[in-house]
Length: 364
Length: 140
Image 1 (spheres, rainbow over the protein chains, first blue to last red):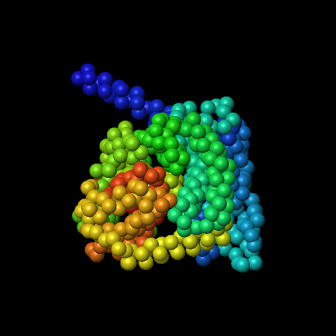
Image 2 (image 1 turned 90 degrees about the vertical axis):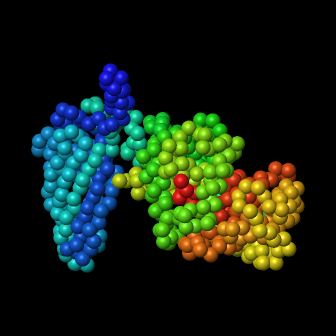
Image 3 (image 1 turned 90 degrees about the horizontal axis):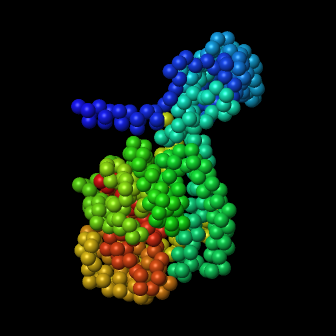
């Protein structure tokens, strides 16, 4: 009985620091000063203009100035307004350029939730232009890009606890990942040309400038990539995306061992078991779609997959390390299979697969 | 950049064409056992490759046909020429005609490149490696 109660207390101690810490007391945005970043889902209904209903997601800053606020661009430019109550921001109607014409936007209220975590709003617009006139509406649904309310004096929102996979880091990760993909593309290009040169498939005077160009790109971009990821990991040391990308960078550099090597970063990434499983599933679905596979490849109906399954289990030694013995990724088939993919795929191939998975999972 | 890619693609395709042509005319062929211990032809190839000798082998396995080469530059190339019937068309599209190259130093040839689909693949590059890696995510 006592042991059970102790377990519950320990579980709460472990769980509480990583869950969202929104205000339990009513929050008042009309007294706050500072800039807060929001993830805003913008749904624009253009059906009356013979257009689609478009939904996009943006990272939008709102600058609060104790009683007034300026909302960043959600499609029709930034707009200022005044608070009419603690959590209702009123934005006046206005006319904005909407090439080739212009749109008259209705006044609207932004209704913030009393726990500080969200807001909703909707306005209508009337477009007039040389290509016709029509009306539509735009709905906004915002979610604070943090796990907690801002502190009262903060100029910029900094979470008070390290998030498990901080949503506020999404734009930083996307930027770093783009640089990493460029770097790994240059590394792959250089490796392929070097192999072709060694095999006599390409002339030296053709290969050398390509290799030199790739090397210059690698030397220029890799310090930047490492700096970007170290900044992210300083805020969120177990971040799945940053650790898996650092693992691919280290693998491409041939640095395998230690906490700053491939296996160290890979283990940290796969300690995020839920997102690892979601990523594995997303990559599988993308492969099935890319190659128009009628079904998931399965050892029971594919001799190749049967052989691959056996080889994967018998050839676990990678650069002198048994990857089964590394600390994570063996608890479920999803994390283990993702580990195989991370380990055996080329850095560029893995980075490309993660680009698609990141787009799908990080913006949910 | 596009010119560079065109040069690489042209040379790469020429090399692949020559490999496939040679696969049809190879003097060495051998049916191999499943992964693990090498068969006699595989063992002979491994010995020659370990000495960085020019060598090729058309390796007929139960899952398909591989064409293996080693060169004096200590570069090993593995091409999946044909995947056996019974596999999904998508798998054939994904794998057939792909290859990977693995560089090594004399005396340090990794025999798993011949006997296994994945063993030692971390030192290789190519679309065969990437296709196999993608399929590992379907293993359990």
